[in-house]
Amino acid sequence: MSEVFEGYERQYCELSANLSKKCTAAAALGGEQKKQKVSDIRAGLENAEDLIRKMDLEARSLQPNVKTMLLAKLREYKSDLNNLKSEVKRIASGNINPDARDQLLESGMADALTASTNQRSRLMMTTERLNQSSDRIRDSRRTMLETEELGVSILQDLHSQRQALLHANNTLHGVDDNIGKSKRILTAMSRRMNRNKWIIGIIIAVLIITIAAVLYFKLVK
Image (tube, rainbow, N blue to C red):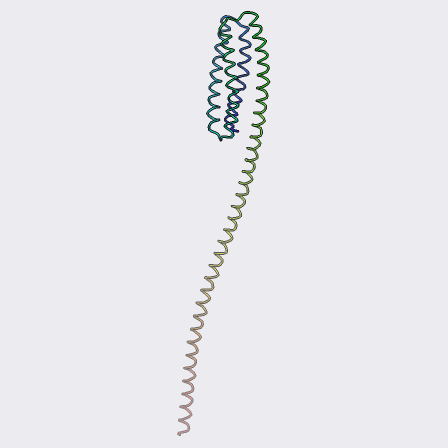
C-alpha cells in the first residue's frame, strides 16, 4: 500500500474522531459559543475534504488491484464525512428542542464512541503497516550497507591485485632490460673473441713464415 495514502488516512482518521467529539460538544452549547464551535467544525470539515481529495488522487495513481481496495475504503470515509456534515447542519440550524438535543447528545456520544473505536482500529492497522514498512526499510538499509561493505572489500581486493600486477609488470620490464643488456654484452664478447682469434691466427702465421724463412736461409748457407 502507498505510504502517502496511509499518511493521509491517518490524518483523516484523527481529524474525523476530533470532529465527532466537537459536534457532540457543540450540541450542548448555545449562543456565540455554539457559533464559534460550529465555525471551527466547518474549518475542520474543509480540511477533511482536502485530505479525501488527496487520498483519491493518490489511490487513482496506483496499480489497479491496490486502487480498487483503496477506493472502496475511500467511499467509507466520504460517507463518514457526509454524516458529519449533516450533523453540523442540524446543530447549526438551532431548531433542536431539549428532548431532541438530549437525544442528539446521546446519539452523538454513541456515534463518537463507535467512531473512536473504528478510528482506533484503523489507526492500529495503519500503525502496524507503518511498522512493517519501517522494518522493511531497515532490512533494505541493512542489506544496502552490507552490499556497500562487500563492494568496498571487492574494490580493495581489486586495488591490491592491480598493485601486484603493476609490480609484476615493472619486474618483467626490469628483467627484459637486464636480458637485453646481457645480450648486448654477450654479442660484444663474441665479436671481441672473433677479433682476437683473427689476431692470434695472423700472429701464428707470421711466426710460422718467419721461422720457415730463418730455416731456409740457414739451409741455403
